[in-house]
Length: 255
Image (tube, rainbow, N blue to C red):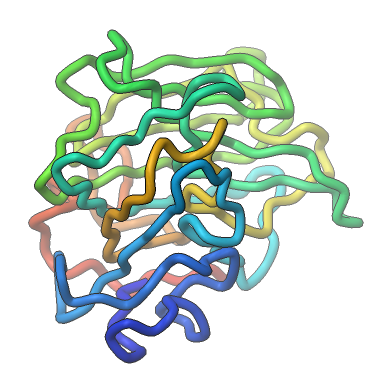
């Protein structure tokens, strides 16, 4: 998703390079751009939990199931003064999210990367709502840095049995090309027949946004094709050395 299609100021929805839904406050912009000529400006209204406004949903062309995998990466620019804290509902902000369900569409919860309040000793956490077990990662230096482009990426291997228990469920998380944690104790599906058919960037502000504000995103990649890039440990990922200044990635699609 490069956001290159569409007129400046129009909603960042409606074509393959944009969000598929829940993106009423996301607009095509040229104010801050990582690559190309356009990016997306994401706005949120103060006091609102903002579903349908904040961020957006990306639908997969086909559902993924047990034994399959997905990479989800985004480049972000948070302006000076942006307040990403949340109040209530767990005191953390939903960030990268991969939804799971039964084949009939019954909600099974999300694989969720959360942002802890600014100044937390550990800035990030992950949970599969199918399991309700938290995994913390990152150091103070790896919290959001304002006024610059940064990259974030989450990899998920889908299974209802964690790798630590003999299954294959696995999660990896990176910031700016650095592997922050490999999570081997988490389920990523509730049951063996469950599926995943969409991803969310933000979409809900726990406790309500502290003020009306905006940030920018560019070059979102979601794929189940193994990327060509490798991190320092040999793990495949989409964001190259940093995810911010990188070679042009290969064409990656979900089959």
